[in-house]
Image 1 (cartoon, rainbow, N blue to C red):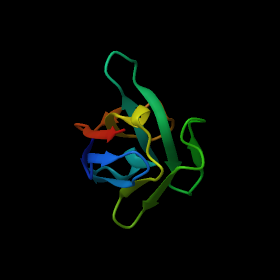
Image 2: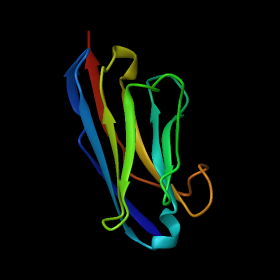
Image 3: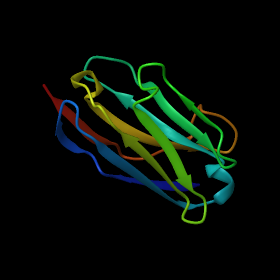
Length: 117
């Protein structure tokens, strides 16, 4: 089992930046793959970015070139640097983790990101 605690959400104007953090505690094995999904009102949860313990990352096309995912394995923490934010990035952002895949078994409580136009 792993516990995930997100922080860093908030309200920002379009074009601005935010940095999300997600700290994991518990089984290190359970955090081999970590990442972020988001869910906007009335929409399904969608993958934003993922990263393996070895540093391999993957991004949704909608955020490529604007968002950067990184992790500190010593702290078992994953970060999402979000630049050039757009109103369509408004959503609840969820941190997730899994031993093997991006079909995450463990989730954080979510953090709200709101981008005003």
